Length: 543
Image (cartoon, rainbow, N blue to C red):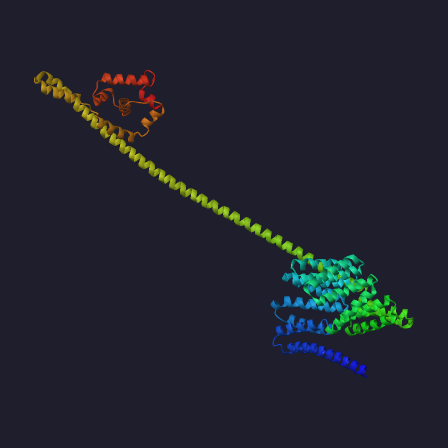
């Protein structure tokens, strides 16, 4: 009696717990559904539909599909500026739904649409997620090589973004592809990398997922009891979180373990539960696999009729999912995508090259125009500068000519004065000769002799004379000096007067010396400069 009461109490507690769990989940679904209904704008409604779809996708992907399609319809009606990012999200979600339905061509089509949009947005994080989803499609299609390639591309992107958890998730999924392609060591290493990260992050949900895959690995290694123990631990978690498809997978895997242990009754019990959930979720791939496993178990139990019927059902669902036509569609979609990518790359390259060529042409044209302008400016500047230089030169030449003319006039005037003074001196000498006979007084005669003996060119006269001479003939004495002739002051006087065209008598009068003295001075100068006999001294000095 007491045992019955305890059992009833425990059952009531479990029932209450399940009811509260279901109510909690229903409350979330009701809240999100209410948000969709109460949305005041299309933008708000789209967000609410996406949130509700995300909630339903791991519980009932058929319901999730309706929400995402409704969101897609609203997005396409909205402004172009708001479409791109939201469209990418919805296309990606619909790809997941299509994959779970077993419609792989539709899944690939949605994923590629999403991928193109994320590439335009340069959103590497979401591009990595789409690569991951594409890898899952190829894994389900048993194209493990391509699946692993996509997984590796995902890891590279997520690693560059420092998404540690994301990298671990991909390693876990890639381990499945390695296991299914019989690369057991690579599979185990991938699982261990993933689990080490999840343990460090204390991520219980993903630890559960790795354990589930490790159980499958133990199964392939014929360690069936270890595999079943892990699967049974996961049953409680899947049931608590209402993860129907995960629950279906665990039932399916436990059935496989019992099959290997030849406990066919237990295997049949678990495969029936797996098949019920697969049908509920309308997951064709899983329905097909469940029928195949059930057919095998029934054959072992010698129920050949039902085994045959189950095998036929397996073929029916399998042919709708795994057929040449679908494989061709998937391949065609990927080839089309690759072609479009190459076409886009070529068009971008062409546009880039065209743009660069245009820029180069424009730059060359601008450069030529600049050179032409600089040439014109240089020519104009040259003309202006030449004009100014010529003008300044002419002005300076004119001023120099005027100054030289003025200096010559001053020198001529000065010479005239000296000549006049010389004539006065000559007249005075004549008067002196007359007075020699008439004047008796010695003192008067002496004074007249002193006046007659006075030099026309005094020291001051010479400096004044030389200054005027140099201004009139600036380079005369300098040229003589450059030829190596060092003239004395008296020699300079002599050649200067000869330059002015004075004859011997005029020179003698101006210097108050005799004509013989002038001749003697000229002789000494000719000897000093080694002038040829008969050659004019001045001509020799200037040449």
